[in-house]
Structure formats: structure tokens, C-alpha cells
Image 1 (cartoon, protein in one colour):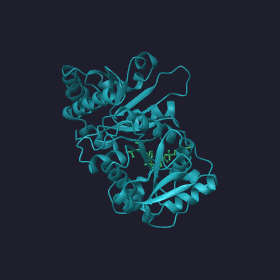
Image 2 (cartoon, rainbow, N blue to C red):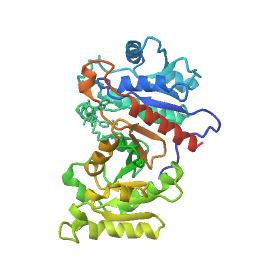
Image 3 (cartoon, rainbow, N blue to C red):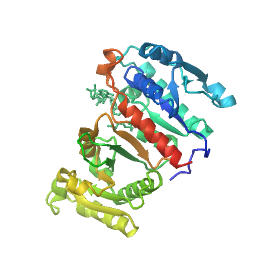
Length: 352
Ligand SMILES: NC(=O)c1ccc[n+]([C@@H]2O[C@H](COP(=O)([O-])OP(=O)(O)OC[C@H]3O[C@@H](n4cnc5c(N)ncnc54)[C@H](O)[C@@H]3O)[C@@H](O)[C@H]2O)c1
Ligand SMILES: N[C@H](C(=O)O)[C@H](O)COP(=O)(O)O
């Protein structure tokens, strides 16, 4: 794991960057609403085009005031102190005019520039953490930059060889335990998943989950339940050999290192209270094995957390919702953005 990039400022209220995401989606709206609703708890700085954000904020609520800071000013003098009567925006100029709900590849590099500014700001000590609003992965690719997700981008930009995507949330069903689902692979075509699951890779993934659940979530002895890859966890090799050849040896090696990793369990029956009640995290083998379950249970309240990074990064559990953005402001729920901000704050405070 790379050295921690964050400056430690004990006793100082953490400043959280909110990258405002795809400008034609709901990102700017939910970022503004969440930051404004939580301004007495969190020092949030919106990262995006300050004029566009001010215009959007004025339409949401004329009481919202936004003060702009340029990256040059922040480089020269740091971020100014700002109170709870306003939001601060770190100004990153748009590439093109925004029409809500309509993607424009001319803004693909703008979105990346907001992520780069957040990383620069964490390294420079302007921010303690970043919470990201959703981006449209295809638009960044259309702009000529290969991009599969924030998770991979933050890993690359911080020189981190392996990170882990974990989504967490409180299920809507009353009485259900808090659910955390981590992924052994992230944004990959399904045909490439099998080859991407290796003993070493799984071992490193389990090490990261175990270490971050201890350090960032205060869980003294994390218990991780691991799903198989194949139907019925391979049915003793008759429905696939990845469990026997890769997953079971990786789990045995992890247990020998002191990690409480159990499985592989058949993924179709793993997500039931009997197993989940004593688990701190479920490790699914691929995106659509784990996330549909998590999102079915918690959609709109969940948080996406990148484990293993040398900085704190959280995000929402949903995408750009272009369908809602096209209908105008006021349709999107900002609860997940608020949860992402709260999680970033909690982790930043835990690491001070
Ligand atoms: N953190 C991220 O950057 C992130 C996360 C997920 C998806 N995405 C990207 O978003 C784009 C669109 O993805 P998608 O269509 O699969 O999923 P989506 O989450 O944007 O939309 C799925 C459905 O949920 C609804 N929805 C989403 N967020 C909502 C909110 N806050 N309030 C109310 N309803 C909401 C939408 O209207 C839609 O009906 C893709 O490019 C995807 O890669 C980004
Ligand atoms: N896999 C995430 C989800 O479905 O919610 C989403 O695509 C965001 O991924 P990044 O955090 O890597 O952008």
C-alpha cells in the first residue's frame, strides 16, 4: 500500500471535497443539496465550474450562497476559511455549455479535471477526504481517455497497485443488519472475470479489507464471508474449478495470516440473515454478483468506499440518472450523497 497522502491536522474540522460529477446528470444538484443540508456538520468544498454550480444552487434555493476559489489561488494561499453561511466551490472551468440530461464529450476532460483537483487538494492539505458525485464513464471514454471508474482512476493516480471497491448500507427492511459488500473484481466484462481472479490477487484483496475494516471502521476482528464464483460454489469441481484451484487456497493462506475469511459459499444463498448476522463484510467475486443484492437492500442510502487507497474516497450508490436530470431539478434524492459525506467525515476523523 502507498504511503498515506493525507496531512494530519488533529483537532481541525475536516474539509471534504465533493467532486460534482457528470455536469449533465444529477451530480451537481445532489452535491449542492447534500453540502447545504450538512453545512453545520461538514466543511464541504464543491469541486466544479463555480458559475454553473452557483446558477444551479440559485435554482435549488436562492438562500444558498457560493464563494468561488480558483486552483491558482488555492495553490498560492490554500483554501480560505469559510463559515456555515455559504458553500465554497473550487473552480474548474467546464469544457462546454451543459444541457441537463444530454451528454457532451467536450465535458469528459472537465470531469477528470475535478478528480485531479481533489487528489491535488488532498496531497496539498486543502482537503482531508473526497466524496465523489457520479460520473458517466462512457463520456470520459468518448473524450479519448480510457476510464472504467473512479476506483481504478484513483488507484492509478495515486500509484496504488490494488484497491477494493466496497459498498455499504443499512437495508430498508426493518431489523436487518448493516450490509457491506466488497468486490474481488470491479469494472470488467464478464468474460474476463475468471482470469482476473488469482490466489495472490484474492489474498491481497482480503488483506486490504481486513486492514481497512480495522483501521477505518474500528472493527477489531473482521469476519469476511467469501462467495464462490460458479453456481453452487463449483459443486465440487463439476460446475467449475476456480473454487478448488484458486479461492479455497487463497482463503487457507489468508486464515494462516490471521484473517477470519470463510467460504467459499454459494452466492445465491449466502445473502440471508443466518450468515450475514455475524459477518462484517461479504466478498463477492464480481460486480453483478454482489452489487444487485446490496442495491436491492439499500439503494439510495448506500455508500461506495474505495479501500486500500492512501486517501479517503467515498461515493454514492447510484449513477448519473440522466432521465431525472433531463426533467429538471428537484427529482433526485440526495440521501446517498449525504451518506457518502458522513462516511468520509467519519473516516477522516478516525484518521486524525
Ligand atoms: N459513483 C459513480 O460515479 C457511478 C455509480 C454508478 C453508476 N455510474 C454511472 O452512471 C451512469 C448511469 O448508470 P445507470 O443508468 O446504470 O444507473 P443510475 O443509478 O444512474 O440510474 C438507475 C435508476 O435509478 C434512478 N436513480 C439513480 N439515482 C437516483 C437518485 N439519486 N434519486 C432518485 N432516483 C435515482 C434513475 O432515475 C434510474 O431509474 C453510467 O455511466 C454508470 O457507469 C456512476
Ligand atoms: N460500480 C459502482 C456502482 O455500481 O455503484 C459504480 O460504477 C461506481 O464505480 P466507481 O466508484 O469506481 O466510479
